[in-house]
Length: 421
Image 1 (tube, rainbow, N blue to C red):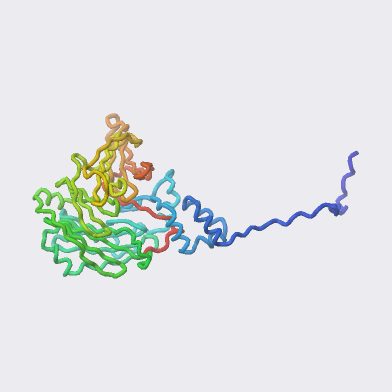
Image 2 (cartoon, helix red, strand yellow):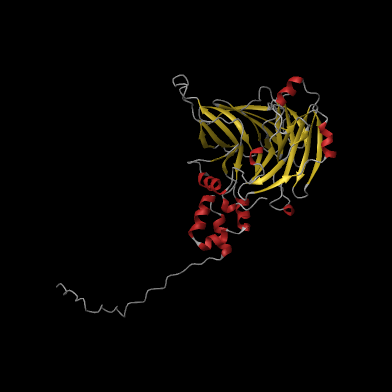
């Protein structure tokens, strides 16, 4: 039988007093130290950023610099883009695209906070810092030596995210005299790898300056911790031919720097040698290159404990050379060569930047209809990051502009990037 409808004025029926009461909802509150350990294990900075914006207690844990320091120590520093005259942020679908976009919006990559911002040229990028040198007043005799006075030019280190900068003092005359009258050809400043000395602090850095002369190469090192320059070592190269000197004046010499096993490396093409600077002992070593191994597709890589490797990217293959170069290491002292097929697309490849873990590649598809397109059409020029251990290739940027050289920019999004200066 259907019950009669309730009148609007009738009071609601009382609940069954015999029914058990509902249990109170549990409010789980984890201690901050447990919550920190959980957040530290998020695989990407993008996940961490989303978590920190979703909950006030999460953000309370993430904001301190101590958390950022721990997170950076546990996770590989992602590639966010590359820097030349401008910053080119990684584009979607690259996994770092959200973090790269956040960095591009928060930082000043026009470097408008520098004095005379149009008078500087980027030389290196590391740990959120950018090293600039003043543009030379000379033309065609190397960009970073003033040929009119044969002296070093000004350097500045800046942090585009915090908009801070430090002017590097000039190399003292008593140190500079050792090379200023030796036919200076090239002055290359770059950052030293981060120090393991915690006493120097996260904002400390070192700048290395390699000076190539007509018959030797010298190294000067500046420490932000001491605020001073020191002269490390001079290494004889023998007198260089006029052709080599002209090539170096035209910036065709040691323009690309590689890093492996704590050593910076340069290919000396006119000698078929590899110049290596050990940053731990600050000593030079010169070793022979294998024949037919140099060119724009050559990278110096780590090939195991005490082993140095040369990777040459061909059209469809990778030519790999390796040898023992430390005296205490076991193995053959001769170059060993192997050729393997690689999974890279059918592109014309050129290495335009490198660090210890990645190569910055410029690629142009060979499938472009070169003979069927009009002169007004140009192929896309694509820029990739190649992870050296896994050979994982990730496209970062597509453009019509062809860049000959650029600096990989690796870092974390602003949330995890305290001021580096």
